[in-house]
Image (cartoon, rainbow, N blue to C red):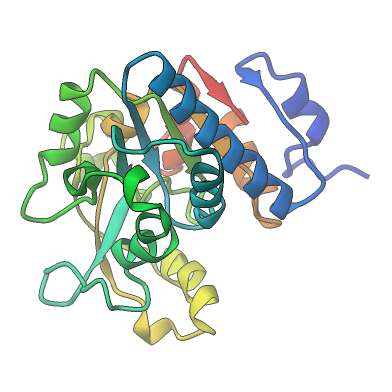
Length: 262
């Protein structure tokens, strides 16, 4: 019996709002397919004499697979710009160090940047992490690069994408939710609990604050590749794509995007 609260495979496969929907056997297959997709975009843009610009999350993707493909096929990442979605802040409001176990910057160094062969490596200035001291940087870089080729997005347990957390209309003070840009946010307890699943349940080590790309930057991407990689996401996907567009479910704003794939 189908649970009406869960999205079904059939609904997604026949939803004309998505340019394509791929169903694979398991999470590892998703990782491999997305790594191949990323490498192919970089390769095609290199052949066309132009750079690639992408928005990447940290979890749950395995970027060692992308590095392995680029190394094996000599795909240059020199003119690749990666804009990460977010980063944690300490209680002092400063960026956590790359040595912190939850640092997204540290993750990118270990799992992608430092794995590329030197002759294929990205330029340091093309590695964009949202920063409290440079809140305007992501949007500026996006405009200078002529837009974002693709953003890979998942839906968090609170309905967030990046760390755009649920809020009320009152909290927005007249600003449209999809016009929000890079800013400092306070994480919901649900989001912190989700993160604690990767720390052995150590909720006390999960920061309460972060700096995140806004919906404006995310929705500016020419393509959104939405990932359903978690077993607990079917109800979230239903609310995001088949419910009302509301700041109480930030992922619902993806319904406004003209080019989505899953």
